[in-house]
Length: 442
Ligand code: ADP
Ligand code: MG
Image (cartoon, rainbow, N blue to C red; front, top):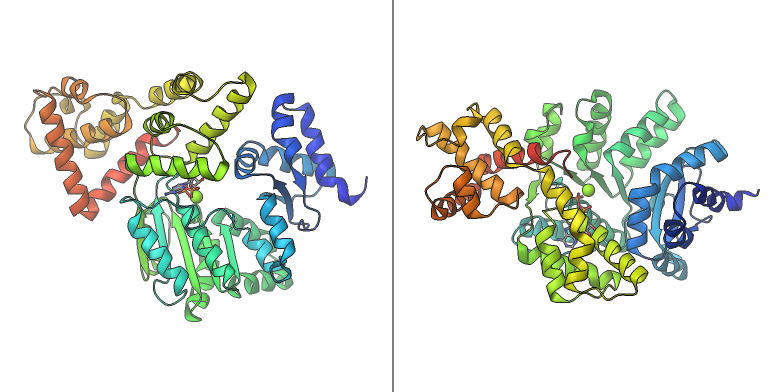
């Protein structure tokens, strides 16, 4: 079989491993881009964002494995959207070179496609400033927040602007950065190339930097890359799940430097923002939903916008299969399991025990009527998180936490929200607890 068909051949092998429906609906829609694939990269083109995301999450590992067993190579499997590829082809200036292929920015991750709201306002403003004056205003820019809140999207939005302005941009996850480093380790010639590559760009975008925690050798390398870029006025943008201060196992000098520019957080979106994000995703993916269904989806997704695309795919797939329109009843039925699964994962018990352990009080005390200061503090936090992370109503929470009535719960919610707004350390504490509770349950 010729080189040309390697990618397609690999895809065909998937036929035996997955259902015919999935194969036809998703895998068959892919094309292997011979032109843009290299030894290190296998690039597949998808007709739209939905399919790209779906195969990326579900099949990247499988496809990589099939490459390994069919060809003995270990390319990184990546996906792009076809229409943009065609546009790229049309304009000769933008034919991808070594540098742009490394960046692999998602072309739909733009500022236009990003919904602004109170929860991300600061991060968006900072990102826009950086896109206008890279290397000048906030360097580095550090964006942090929970899973699916739009960190990668926002970082790439800056990257897309910079790339359009002719800058060379490298986008990489810190995991890829580490793998790349290991690949070149022990070989002076190629190690120089590795250094040139990362130190020679105009902007370096590194995603999920917390992944480097505890890995000293790569932190050392990244430190020098960072210094070199920053000294030459090149822009660095990083994301992480936590504030740099809170990333354990990260060298102090890196923590310090990460705060030199600007640290911006993204908070979970408010309901209106969630609704606007769903609308946006419907527009981009040409899925038609009425307001009732959109509102319904907004109430069932917790805080992770990544779920939205999964839901849209699911609704669309069922609608096609059943030849039905997507009305509210239909949506409720299709998404029923999803909701039960999720709600079942985060229990009041889990919240209470996590908070109690963290704040050194007894779980039983949290639900008691004790007025001890520490216990009241822990109780308030547990109530706040329970309201946010479970489907309990305010009245149910009042009962569970031994409070007089629902106004006491509302009062607590207000108090904690105020504290979060005014006290940075408290906000971090709540975030940390939320992470502890939700980790592994999504
Ligand atoms: P993170 O990197 O924080 O885990 P992503 O950037 O991968 O999150 O976002 C997950 C998905 O949610 C992406 O499809 C992204 O486009 C979408 N998303 C998140 N926040 C927004 C937003 N404010 N506006 C539009 N889309 C968003
Ligand atoms: Mg991300």
